[in-house]
Amino acid sequence: MLKIGDITLKNPVVLAPMAGVCNPAFRLIAKEFGAGLVCAEMVSDKGILYENEKSLKMLYVDEREKPLSLQIFGGERESLVAAAKYVDKNTNADIIDINMGCPVPKITKCDAGAKWLLDPDKIYEMVAATVDAVQKPVTVKMRIGWDDDHIYAVKNAQAVERAGGAAVAVHGRTRVQMYEGTADWDIIGEVKKNVSIPVIGNGDISTPQEAKERLEKYGVDGVMIGRAALGNPWMLYRTVQYLQNGEIAPEPTAREKMNICMLHMDRLIELKGEDVAVREMRKHAAWYLKGLQKTGSVRNEINQTTTRDNMSKLLFGYVDQLEEKQQRIS
Ligand SMILES: Cc1cc2nc3c(=O)[nH]c(=O)nc-3n(C[C@H](O)[C@H](O)[C@H](O)COP(=O)(O)O)c2cc1C
Image (cartoon, rainbow, N blue to C red; front, side, top):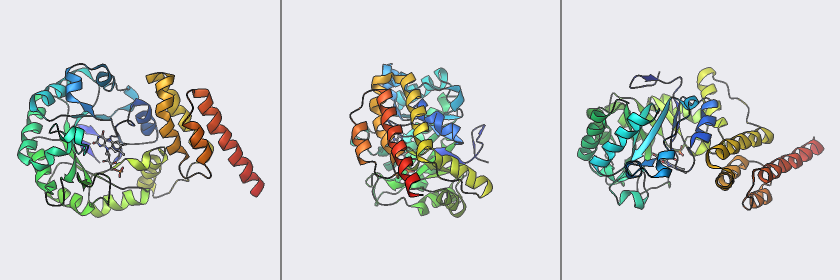
């Protein structure tokens, strides 16, 4: 059983933190599809400290999402610790996660995200200061290293452990790789062998079978799933089912996908209003359509739409046509 601090997860399947994606609307769907833990998108420590409206809104947690991990990022000890204290006192998140993997120059230039990967001493110092300042368990999400010449995954994870971190999630790519190449699970396995806190493996898990294989082969305590869950929360459900009973649940139908897409949109509208939500949902709708036949023209139309009702008309119009075609064939 995966336990982070005093929080026991009901299964080892974790929804990865994804900026622009993991807001309460999608996280709640992931939760309803069975994820043992959902992670929120990263929030800037300075944004929290300066009480930036957008940053504070990102700290909202619906009770139904719990247990939930809220991720912060920063490069300086003082502001990181202060932001962690704010999250500790003012949110109902269960876990405070520190981002140590974001590869984007805007973030690494401020000594935040993946920049930490070059300096295990800094990791120790920053994590220890955060752990000392808060009640909630503190975890870290990291990449394996900065580049091929600086892979300090084991040292860095040990620094997290010594500092009192409650778990570490490891994405098996370097910072320089961004999202290219493949995740190196052998290094994730090395981390697991060299620390005693829970290790959650991450990177390129795209099927329930892969999730199970990685749990068994590398001995990790949990699997974190990111891109494979985009427009596809069934990936989480099917993985949980497969781990529990060895059965592969059927893929969703096109209509089932669109029903969840609309639930997702309606929840996003409640959070952000129709205008913003519909624009944000364009990318999600394209993800929900992924894998279905002949989606070119409906995708183009979705990208122009500004209202909920029009989006619904387009999506279900597409499904009606698809079903008619399937009936004619059968
Ligand atoms: C759109 C997007 C946004 C992401 N945002 C974050 C983030 O806010 N914090 C973080 O630690 N990782 C972030 N990541 C990285 C993912 O959490 C994960 O490590 C990565 O996608 C590899 O896992 P996967 O192969 O299952 O997608 C993001 C990834 C994507 C695709």
